Image (cartoon, rainbow over all chains, first blue to last red; front, side):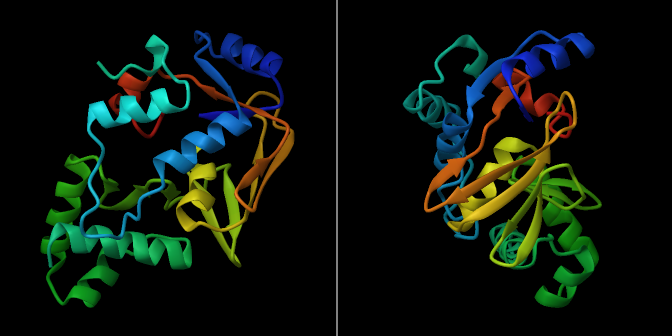
Length: 72
Length: 141
């Protein structure tokens, strides 16, 4: 996941690497995703990786519902 | 020593110092053999908790090796694996931070400031790999 100056720069990068354009999000959306994802203390004995259902629920909670975000 | 304790130690050291502990440091800390630490790390890698190449390479959101995502927070410099992880560092530390990176296309330096729970910056984030494929090659992802 890279950071770009604009969507035009995303498109240039995809073209240069011959990759399909993936998913573009604003910094604010990325911040909400990061804070949701890393909210739990990974030093805690009870910490566990999320299940597929939990991850999809987390994605859905911040509007990431397209097939790109599907884990199945 | 169990795997939860090893995970906790990896995160504790990384969050305080910016770098995951080496196997040798965990051997000294737990008073066990290098083989026992290595076996625990391999189980954590198999469980996709850490990325391990003999030593811990990634303990998301932290990277053990230098990357183009530098996060300064609380007087400590951290490396992140990607922009999502770079944002994840102030999230997991629950502290303000400055993220220094560059445009993935043109290389122009870019900065993100996280202050009082809000991220400030002018760029956009691009996810190239669909979510279901992230762990096919997590280092590339």
